[in-house]
Length: 238
Image (cartoon, rainbow, N blue to C red):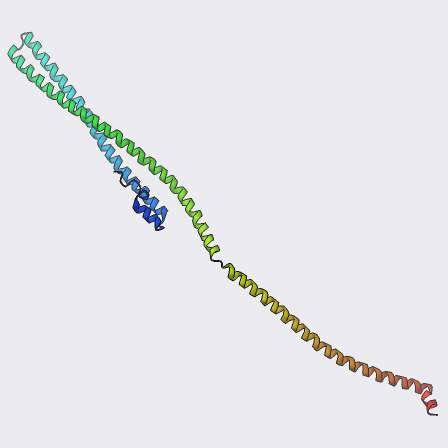
């Protein structure tokens, strides 16, 4: 009856766990098996209890029969003693009644033995039923804990797997490439700036040179005009 109490305790279940099968499903199946065994044990307990009750009733029945035959034998002897019945006939019938009494007594003793045996079996089955109920309760509580542990372990495994898939070497290499790229962009920007400054300087020099020439011509013209106004050029010619 208890060979299949719990599958996790069997070698097949251990093998399944080693193969990473779902422990929650295995535990739930084990609990279902336990409940099935409990139903069978309860049925057996009810049947044995019924036989114990029947044996107890038989004990009382045969006990009453034995008592009744004894009373009948005594009554026959009393009637013979009172002259109501032939003594020889009374003795014969009383003897028959006593034989029936012995038969009933024997049946009563056999029924009592069966009653004792059945009651012993009832006690054993009752212990087994209580044991199965206790085991079911224990594993149902452990199943709750197991489900919580599986959730935590699954989340932890997922996180660790994600972390494990991160290639630190490639990450560092990527960062170095990014730094090189930024440095390259900065250098290129500075280069374009220098080129822009160089182009601007040439234009400035050209404009400055042109502006300087125009100023000198203008100053010379203004000076000549001033001298002419003062008559200095005329005096110089004289």
